[in-house]
Length: 400
Ligand code: ATP
Ligand code: MG
Image 1 (tube, helix red, strand yellow):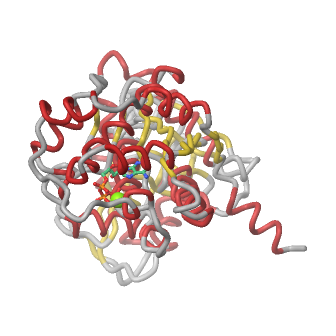
Image 2 (cartoon, rainbow, N blue to C red; image 1 turned 180 degrees about the vertical axis):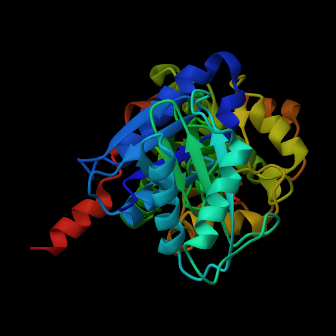
């Protein structure tokens, strides 16, 4: 006997009423995409659950992939047998003996197929007694067992699962529309992108760079960050905006203490243009209240004035430590701390206004003409599409 299935549980989505069906199909498609390097696997849907048929592939590698898929609450290896008492007993015994470092267990039977003649409670007792009499060294603990052996008796078959592996939770990427992530080379914005994806949002990214003040390596850093995000969803399009002329104009023509505010407003104006062009309905930033001068309430108010597109700020209530923790788990931290310049750090004014006002900023902006420069920046946008295959390509290159 061997584990030939993975059972996928998707808690939150079960609550989602009308959208439920499309969430589930999205999850199935996302899983299939994650498993494209395992061509023999298939992903099946059944009432309230999803199953991956392993067809001989290594279960550990597949579990790892599943742990990158939003919408999965938890998963377990499963063995499938017919709805037959003797077969269920044999499989349960095999599953228990297959575990290491287990002393206590509990059997949890769920009888979904009411045609199965033995009720759940009775089946629990039958299996518990059977396992105890066919093994030695185990005991039953119904409160805190080392292992909960669950047995789901469904219409089509019975599945016996052992240890539960936690999933990422959230909603399947693609089930909640698309956002344009303002992606800098910092620690915060990739985490903001990850959290937006967790709510089912598909991400495109926009990055403002200022060559020659920012180097190609600074741009590569941002592409590497975006590539990390592809591991949790779809391919990601990165719009790279040549921002040098806009920035220089700001720093020549505008009062220095308002330069930061005006620069951010220009970023949002250009981002809104990209949103319109790509039919994207929102933007996402890595802003978190109080972190730096541009992230006071006054500053957000002055910056946000230029667009009425919703701006998602998933980090707004988070502490830096928690943001860093996430960036480490999603493997973006080491990239973010690479010491390459970003357009904001280069042109950062010595004393940015922490309480800018809309009135003043509008007055300053009206004294210079930015529209040609914005148009030029928009026309110069370079689009790079990351498919999430980079790891494989690297591995492939290493072979030669
Ligand atoms: P991060 O760590 O994401 O860079 P931060 O703490 O440095 O954030 P700011 O520099 O104030 O904060 O930037 C606020 C947000 O503005 C960023 O999280 C990002 O969403 C956006 N942003 C800043 N610089 C750029 C850039 N060069 N290109 C695209 N977006 C940017
Ligand atoms: Mg930054």
